[in-house]
Amino acid sequence: MPEPEPEPEPEPEPIEVGDSILYTVKRALGVELEYTGFDTDILMGINTSIMSLMQLGVGSEETEVVTDDSAEWSDYLGEGINVQAAKSYIVLKTRLLFDPPSSFVIEAINKQIEEISWRLVVQTETPVVE
Image (cartoon, rainbow, N blue to C red):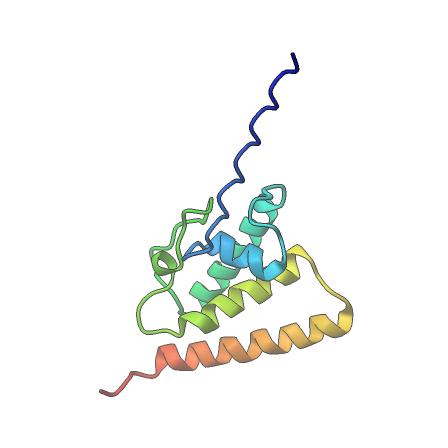
């Protein structure tokens, strides 16, 4: 009598990006969320980028190092700044550190970083009138 075929293993649940800093950056870099082989390098770029933002006066003064996928944007970016611009800044800076493109693209990315930096600083220094 033939053996019954084993039941197929269930598909793993897809990872949700949500508010995770690591997952957001990995998705923007084109790295599969499930693949962890580059996480250390990506985390290093994220933390360097957050430090740069802090030196510009953007984000929380009490920022801790991002060590895994549990760190969320809301924990690192203070109130009153353009969160999407700060995310773009961190993604672009991390891309340059993690996977630098050709020189033409690097120049374009650096110009974007400069503009986002300037806008974030201006927004941080300019009080919002209600």
